[in-house]
Amino acid sequence: MTQRTATDLASAPIGEPATFAPDPERGRTHGMPFIFWVLEQSLGLLVAVPTVIAAAATLLTSGGWPVFVGTWFAVPFVLVLLPLLYLVLRSHTHDAGAAKWDEFVTFRDAKDAEQWRGKKIPMEILYEAYMAEKLDFKQDVYDVLLRRNQLFRFCFTWGDVRFYFRQFLGTNVTHSQESDKGDIAHVYNRGNDFYGWFLGESMVYTTGIFRDKNESLEVAQKRKLDTVCQYVQMKPGDRHLDIGCGWGTLLAHAAKEYGTTSTGITLAQEQADFAKERAKSYGVADRVNILVDDYRNLPKVKYDKITCLEMAEHVGIKNFQRFLLQVKDMLKDDGIFYLQIAGLRRAWQYEDLVWGLFMAKYIFPGADASCPLGFVVSQAERAGFEVHRVENTGTHYSITIQKWYENWKRNEAEIVAKYGQRWFRMWSMFLAWSVLIGAQGSSALFMLTLTKNTKNDKSTVSPEEAKKVPFSRQDRWIGPAPVGTQQ
Image (tube, rainbow, N blue to C red):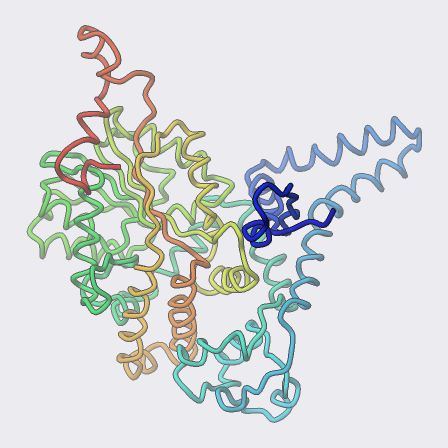
């Protein structure tokens, strides 16, 4: 009996027996969760795994030290290095082919041009040559990148492999206070003018929320600030903590518009100085406090509301659970935690990973917790949080970055004069490429509203017991204001 598809069955005579063809679609492997698990473990456990396996192999075979040593080195090779090698080799087979890129890019050295003549140029080769002024775009960077599937390749190069093993892995395995400060502080201490040239007046380094694609960046960022404040139901007198406060705009906005007493923490003195001036200009300097320190050194004070907008990526997979437990410990039992985090899609494409390595190398070093939503939600629930709202705002981010890119281009002369061509080109590539990444879902931005997952609810116990229960979910999440109440 032949197998038929649903289309065949739709046209088959009534009453005729049906058989179904197997679905050829297959989901992704468990490789990504396995990598997450490995990065989360202590060095001691990672050493213990091959040791135990090697000891068992030695006992079973009576092979002595040669078997033990061979097995010990074979375990990480088979479980880690071999899959990575396979990924690299496979990346070189999926989108190779001919390409005519002469209309869009030009190499300054004829030898470089000849090496890639008629072939797709690997993205790592492209952006490194562009930043080093060995290659120029003949058209706008964004317009050329729209044709990236026709002109360029998303394969891992020797430069990618070298960066991964020399820097990326080392940073992600440690994530100590010293290494995180070394990775992050200098990035945001570069100069407030550098960031102001693309962020604009709001100085908010995250997505706006748009009701129309043609709205101004400032309108969209104001709406975003209000949305965050409403998600956590800010009210006068609330003690508010913003972890990774950036230039302090959310702190000043919450204090001025919602009556909070807000504390922010950042690793960058440049950001802190700007944030203090911003609070002063908003007339709320007495209710805004800025700390320059690592989040792990935050004093153990209880807060009504805690927000964290795109800083958690930097705590690393290794520290993510501990970070969430620390937040939970600082949050009052009836408090609300807003977590905003960018992450790669679970069903990744090679472009996602190549872009991710570029970002790790040049834009957001040490931000390896940019993981799919499943990782974030699983970690939050594991830490004892209840997830009330999750919203994907990747498309809003794409529009936001498009406007940043336009700002950046308008300020080219000032940027090049102070920071040079390399920095201008690096951020041109970052912004132009990220517009596309956000629009196609390669990296999404998730907004999560979380509370402590308490044992009982005021509505599920007697009136006497209810006095000791932190809050009622019904009172909190049901009401006339959709943003502030409904899930």
